[in-house]
Amino acid sequence: MHHRFSEPVKNWSNSTGKLSHWPLKDSFEYYAVLAHRDRLLRGRKLSGANTTLSFADGNFTFQINSLGFLHYTTVQLGTPGVKFMVALDTGSDLFWVPCDCTKCAPTEGTVYASKLNCLSNTLFIYSATFALHGDGEVGSSTSKKVTCSSSLCAQRNQCLGTFSNCPYMVSYMSAQTSTSGILVEDVLHLTTEDGHPDSVEAYVTFGCGQVQSGSFLDVAAPNGLFGLGMEKIAVPSILSQEGLTADSFSMCFGDDGTGRISFGDKGSPDQEETPFNLNPSHPTYNVTVTQIRVGTTLIDGGFTALFDSGTSFTYLVDPTYSNLAVNFHSQTRDSRRPPDSRIPFEYCYDMSPDANASLIPSMSLTMKGGSHFPVYDPIIVISTQSKLVYCLAVVKSTELNIIGQNFMTGYRVVFDRERFVLGWKKFDCYDIEETNTSEEEQHPVSAPPAVAAGIRNYSTPESTKDVKNNNSLTSVTLRSCHLHVSLPFFFGLVSILTLLS
Image (cartoon, rainbow, N blue to C red; front, side, top):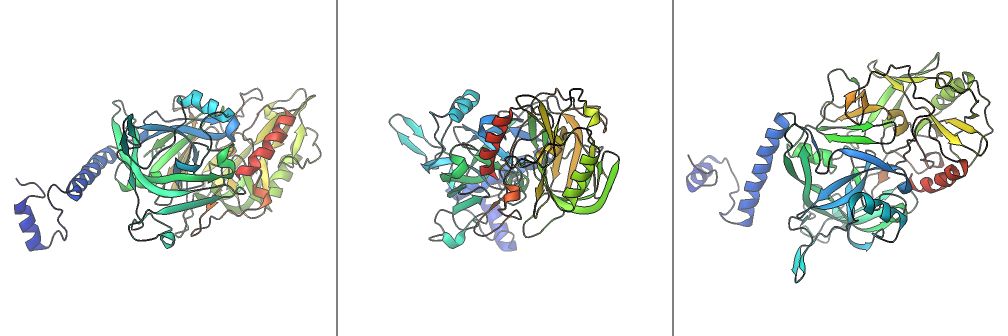
């Protein structure tokens, strides 16, 4: 028996041409290769057992109202581990955190800081440089700056040299909202989700966000953003590439704004599914809807749409939008209110005193392949000084269809990038057990508030997302059926959330 880097094996390999490069024993490269192989072997063991992974602090996600109603979770980075409260977004790819800041959101002295500090003890700033000082260690001992020679460096044209630090810059749809810095690699602390949890250290590439602007400085993701898209720099892609999980993940969306995320989850055999429409140059979670049912009316005419958990509401272009809205209106018994330019919804109604959810037209989508996707939360409820108002929570778009988070409420949604399918099943996000709610059942009007909003797709200097910056997509606002908020507060919130789209 010989060590794989022993002299006998080296001589045999040289004679057969099996290995073109042999690391010098006891060198940094020698141990780096061994460590990398250990991670791959451990990863094969994990993925071979169909193990799913969650963040070290758990798979629970939640919404923070004062921060744009985005979904957040806690991630732990580096050695020693430092915690960050990051927003989750399937509409973007890069994972970034505030780091070695030139211009970042304040970590104290603000309303959002006090709320985040309450949840995660304190807000941290990542350091890509490890150093020893008299008062202890600073930074992460496992941090490594990504060079311009890396395949993940998309902006090589801005590099000073092959081995210089790889820069990045991502501009989001919101006016003057962006993040820039350098790419780094470090440990993301995860854990297995079986009966015997085991810690997993995954080396991921992410953005050391040195300069943030716009909404990232106050109203959205001040402690980082976790992109979940399909590009190779996204964390789900890295976990799969390293053999740690299957190339799939799931997100559960609860009625009250709670949720869960699980990496490697491929769903269950009895879930409904539809294939992704892949654009090889820029893959996204795009699906085909073949039919919409509104109440007793079937609307034919297929269209494609982005299935985007980072968008609060659903956006449809004409003629689909008008067909859906008109049929919803024709089957609604309450009086329609005049349109109000301060909110993005055109079809709003005064709720009658004897309001009953069964009187509101139900809705369901038929996907490519024939699977049905009942929509449990198609409306939003707003409180005024004298009455309740409800609106069809679908916004008219000028060029892009988006199935937003409000349509995903009540489901565990599986983003299977191995089989290129979207899966869904009715779930309770608190205990991840199936509920037996029928397709026709709607949540009662008195259900707890559930609100959210999302960061829109972004563009980089080298790759532009399909979503363009147009007014019809700037009202990313409160999501969910039966949300009770005051009308003045709602109008004010819309004005804030338009910054995030």
